[in-house]
Length: 90
Image (tube, rainbow, N blue to C red; front, side, top):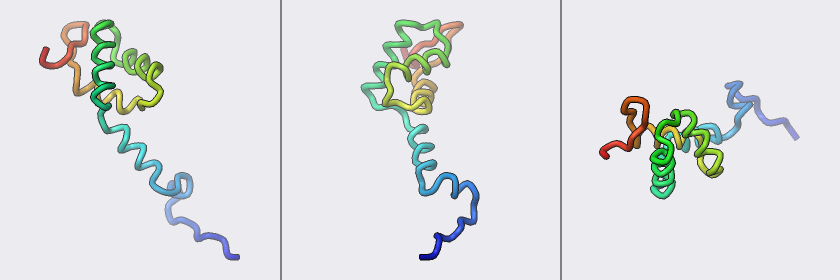
């Protein structure tokens, strides 16, 4: 039996298929609405926590969410007002 053909792109050999592209797309999607509400509740409870702190804390307590998704949702849901984060439109 002949060996499979060598890929023309070295990165394709390291990450066969579209798994890398799928993970990139998932991280760019916002969280589901119920998770967005949990994120809002977390920020309301600890408004002085940094953006990275909120992302890390939320990711630790919600293993099913990627940090990219959390970051995307955070950037769309919150704005910084002085030293605290507030929900946009409130």
